[in-house]
Length: 101
Image (cartoon, rainbow, N blue to C red):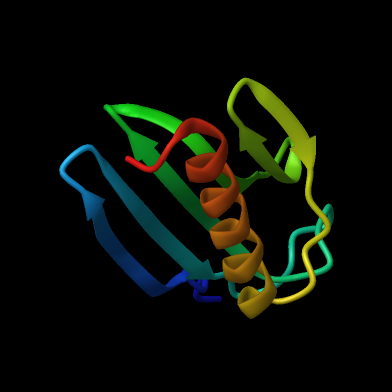
C-alpha cells in the first residue's frame, strides 16, 4: 500500500511594506485528520518588524486556531476562501489599531 502525501496548494509571500509581509502556506491532505472536519493544513502569517502579529494555523494537537498579538483563540474553519477573508480582516484590524506599517 502506497502512503499518500499532502499536496501543496499554495505558497506565497506578499510584501505589504518595507516593514511588513504576509505569508501563505496551504496543503491539501489525503484525508481529514480525526480531529478536523476538513483535509487542509495551513499557516497564514502577518509579520511586522520581524514579529508575527497575526497567524492562522492548525497544528494537529491544537486544531484550527488564530493568534492575534499575544492572544490565541480557536478558529471555526468554514472554507479556504473564508479563511483568507478572515485573515485579511484581522490584518486590516491590526494595521488600524497599530497604525499602518
